[in-house]
Length: 443
Image 1 (cartoon, rainbow, N blue to C red):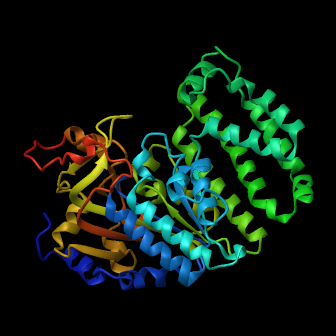
Image 2 (cartoon, rainbow, N blue to C red):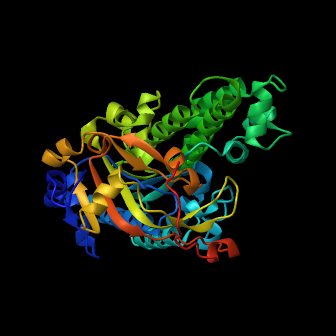
């Protein structure tokens, strides 16, 4: 039983930096960044306003003060790249058009007012700089099987029409479906030939011919060639991902996070090849960015972005920052593909790290997980994770997992009460406010 004056609470109070309402709230975090290449900024939900706005505030400082030149987010590669073109002044002039490719559920995850505000800032920031100093906005995910295949063909149609024709032939195994999960089911069941070998062949051709494309078009075409090459990787990995959903014991979570990490390393190399620093801010869920080895995920044989970056880039090159909330509201659906709603988040369980932080009565704080704080927060506690679906009626089973917080993250931000992020597309479902109610203990 943790009492108000327990040693653990005193340790947290002593180490915590209470937050106000200005950029100086992040001074301690900025000192921790040092010369690291990757700063990973998490979120305990996919629909909390404060998580988005705080990550934006931190990222503005990382860009302006420490020269970070890329923001990589848990979004599909082609969708985010349309925003990348916009913020660099080479794509859609209208910001609303630039958000146009975010059509897949959950649209509010990136089509929201907080992200819109950050994109406006990034576009204005880049507008005053030479192109070689622009900060880009990129996606890490692999769900865009068909949009990425179309993007590869469109690129080749401009630089090598004969290869575009070949690409259509190689990708023909994906045709007639246009629904990734249907393709995966049919390929796994032997109802259609898998497109794996064709996708690999197309990628090999694209990489082999890249020098010729760049020689013909000049160095200004490097970004577009990189965009096409990463789309070809998406097709290859997404094809495997969707088949694995139905056809084997391969862990699709591991496939997805491995793809994200490969994309981060490719992006770093691409930026450095252009004389850039290749320093990248990552926005994704805590479950992707905290080290999986410190959680139940790792016990199940799952890895994630945070773990792989610590292993492959080195712990000194990646700063892992988690975000937690005790209660409030969140934008989430009641089920997959259901409308976005403004849902009430019940207070955290008494045996969770969120409740522990709430018990400090600090309200909002930043906690570096080093020294005595790291030692005292090493024993496992429950931690809450809300994705795009929130099921409070089965909250323990659906949204909690065990983790050693100080081994999972280098630091955390905690907020006692948070609010729902506002979607760009507000429906009657979201406008209706779900109030707190009485409830039984989560099962």
